[in-house]
Amino acid sequence: MALQNYIRLDDALCAYVRTHQSGAGDPLFLDLREETMRLGAVAEMMIPEEEAALLSILVGTMRAQRAIEIGTFTGASGRAIARGLTEGGKLLSLDRSEEWTRIARAFWRRAGVDDRIELRLGPALSSLEELEADSSFDFAFVDADKTSYEAYYEALLPRMRPGGLLVFDNMLREGRVLGGDLRHDPDTEAIARLNDKLREDSRIEGVLLPVADGIYLCRKKRQEWDLLPE
Ligand SMILES: C[S@@+](CC[C@H](N)C(=O)[O-])C[C@H]1O[C@@H](n2cnc3c(N)ncnc32)[C@H](O)[C@@H]1O
Image (cartoon, rainbow, N blue to C red; front, side, top):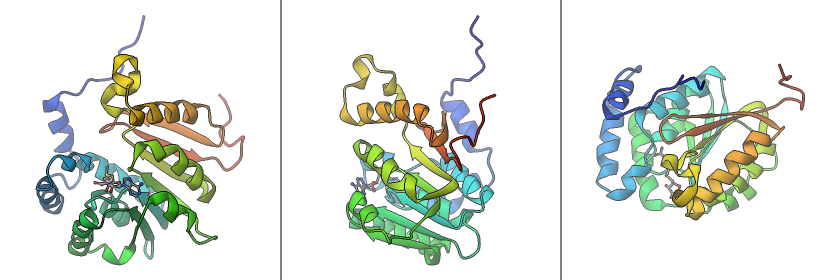
């Protein structure tokens, strides 16, 4: 007998989830969403507020000081990460769009986190290659072009401190990872391959969470034997 120990979210339940978190209905977040929606269909790329809340809690819980994100867009995830950092903490935010990140910069100023964030513009892989030799991170969030996720993973993992957390967004691709006729796009193929790879990767402990469009949490092990099998 299969246990049905999970729940399917419909619109009403999703709205319930969103209205039952600390700071639900945060006017700054709602303003940013409104401004982002004026950009048209691309607005769908903005993370939802429960994901923003989760990022802040994760960053705060691990007392992260140095964080990096790939995929700034209009700034929602950047603010969420920055507000969770410990005193003196810094976020390096990477994107290639001048237009969208102009909105992010203004939003961060308004939210009072601009002094904790450095934005670098350009193709993210080049920005990663150009990082200072001694740059390392406690926390990383990846939310950009899906076909580069694996390359981002391999570039970031050596720079994560042992015990550090790497978070990938859109790892369910609205269910398309299940395959069949649905999986025929390069982005979903890339994500499905990465999900398989992360499951087998002994350098991390990972879990795929059905939050928003699926987020994969990867904690870099301190040692190969960090988490002993039960
Ligand atoms: C899904 S959006 C990020 C959403 C954002 N994290 C948020 O909280 O709303 C993806 C972003 O990745 C950026 N991007 C896509 N491919 C990129 C690349 N190769 N290098 C740098 N940025 C890239 C896009 O410009 C876009 O702003």
